[in-house]
Image (tube, rainbow, N blue to C red):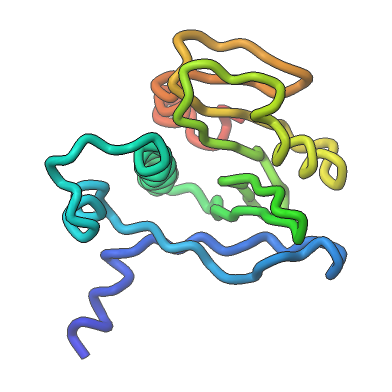
Length: 169
C-alpha cells in the first residue's frame, strides 16, 4: 500500500482534452511524466549516453511540462494541464486551462529553429479553437512569430511563467 500512496508524488498526469467531435478524438488516455528527467534516463539506461534527437526531444518536453506544473503550483494556480490529439495524429503537447477557459496551446520542440512545417498540430487545433493563443517553446535564441503562433525561447517561457503565472498568457 505504501508504494501506491507514493505514486502521485512520482508521476505527473496530464489528461487528454476531449475533442467536441468523437470523429476527431484519438485517445482519451492520460500521459504520465516522471518527476525528474534523470530518473527517466536511469530507467531507460541512458544516464551517461548522449541523447539521440528523439530522446532529447522527449526529455525537453518532459522538463518543460514538469516546470510548468511546478511554477503554476508555486503561484497556487487553479490551472489544469491537458494535451490534445486527433485521430489523424495532430497533437498539441500542452494546453493550459483555468476555470473552463483555455488560456494557451503550447507545442514543445527541441529545435533551434522553428519553421511553418513545425506548426501542424497547432494549426489543426486552431481550426476548432480559434481564440486560444498558440505558442511554440523551443531552443530558439529569440522570440518571433509565424502565422499567429508565438515562438519563444524556453528560458523566456519559464521566466514569464515564474514572474506572472498564468497571467503571462
